[in-house]
Image 1 (cartoon, helix red, strand yellow):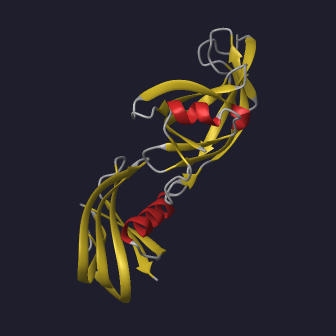
Image 2 (cartoon, rainbow, N blue to C red; image 1 turned 120 degrees about the vertical axis):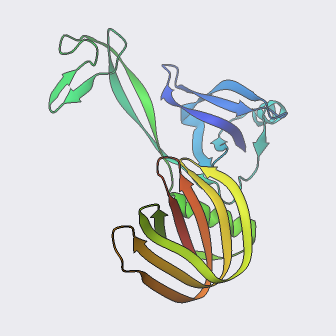
Length: 229
């Protein structure tokens, strides 16, 4: 059984529980806490978390919360681990300057009063995520080729010589948003820069998918190129 959640907490309480925001059967967000030791896996699909939770009260959770037996194929597992941070009397975490501990508020005149257990989640690569997402949505088998980038200053513009299908999408994964998908034949990559007069063009025969992707931290476009197998 997988519980469907909108967020998973990063702090383990003294009772060994972690805060989550679960979806109810009516899709309403509900704050709750789960025993951290009972969480076996956490998967993420860009919109929801899927928590593989070990419990003897499975019927209780199924009756109150949204659950699935299997997450979407493109939901990827998160690696997670725990670590401890010491807490100063002012409530701040103790930081380190080289080999010297200090408090951001109290400086070196700090007093450690407690420690907390935190959870670190490692998210999967965005290129692998969109590969699985496109395979599931478009019924294709793909292999990642490369990531081309282009903005106003130049870069590598990436198109297809023969476009057989173009789909407008708006699906986000972390900082990335998939905008368009082009399916067709013969990859055309044109590289140029604003301060150079030379233009490089490369053509590669075959069947490809181009995912046009943006990152809100950048100005420009990424072209994730996948070969159709």
